[in-house]
Length: 169
Image 1: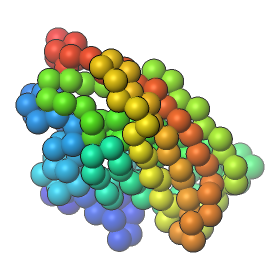
Image 2: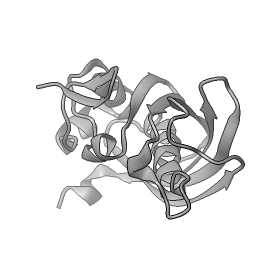
Image 3: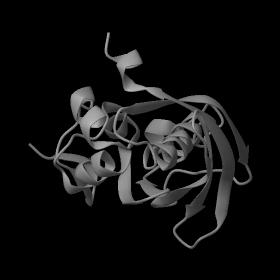
């Protein structure tokens, strides 16, 4: 079953990842399977109209379409929308370097919103890259840009890396 996230962007389905597959394959292979449509996109991708569009070791790109459904009371796209897209890129950059048997979670992230995100501005793109991958901590950075490349926001994230068995209770 395919699901249209927004016009022109379709994913194979939505749902959560099977943790046994993550344990077996590690982050990069799982993200590649999501991109190929062999594993589902997370449900929030449909709710917030964004999805993974590129993945490689230590780097991911998400595309999103901010709309009137994402407005704050003053008529700009809510910062929480931007934060969610950016947290996804920041976290998945880390996920792309997580080895079989490992999982990760965000410890903290910081964003700088430098321009308003507006409905009708078209697709925006968020690139996340790994900065450092240690044994138990990883850091990443990301940039959200409009279709012409203008910077809208940038940020960093710190994630903990731990045995995936801690999630499989």
